[in-house]
Image (cartoon, rainbow, N blue to C red; front, side, top):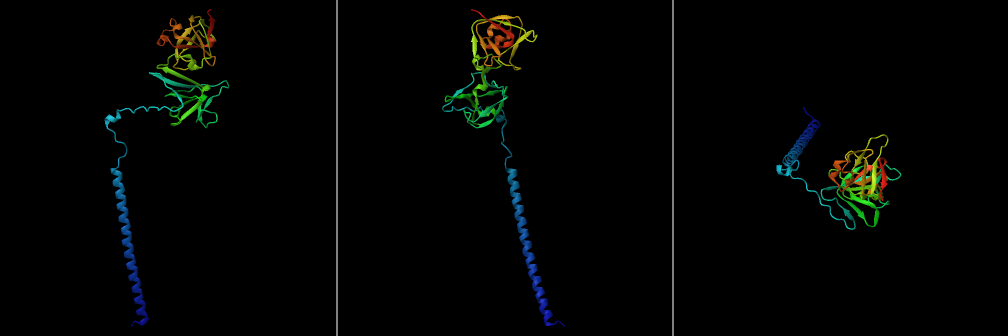
Length: 272
């Protein structure tokens, strides 16, 4: 026979079991609700990803349409130089008397401006235009995008630059583009040997480059030039291309231009 205390203990146990069961049922419903919500959220994200475009959809006609070249707007206070029609503007980096191997690119036309980087001497870069600041004549400006410096105007000391307006292929151009420091009047030019060479290279620019050679002229060749130019670094003599038209046929591709021969191959005798 069950005592009163035993009856009371069994009743308390039943209540505990009932509460635990109700708590477990509530917890199960809560977990199911959370799982259903998560499944709906994942399904919605997946559907949105499937319906969203993965990139720009282009028609075949759009593939064939070239991207227009942006027009460079004038910059107030700066003088801009553009290439001539059917020409290209080429920047060549040169060293100074100290034979530096790089030149500084700056954020402004002053030695006090921040240094953005350096460009190696000898580099030749096709550029869209150049700028001069009338108040800072010692620097030349360029579109930063041409030199790899973003959309700003960048500046380089003019003494390190040769700026050439050339046609395609490399054409003889005016001597002032190379810092011509001297010129002589009508002269007789004789090609002489140097280091035992039997001929001399004739170039469209006053430095050595693979794509600048017009050909070679034999030593002991003599011709008359109405004008003899001397390059800024004193290393090359320049002559009107027409002076050599009997010696080098392909110079006639630009008979009004200037051709250059290394000064070591030339003897200049002025004609009075």
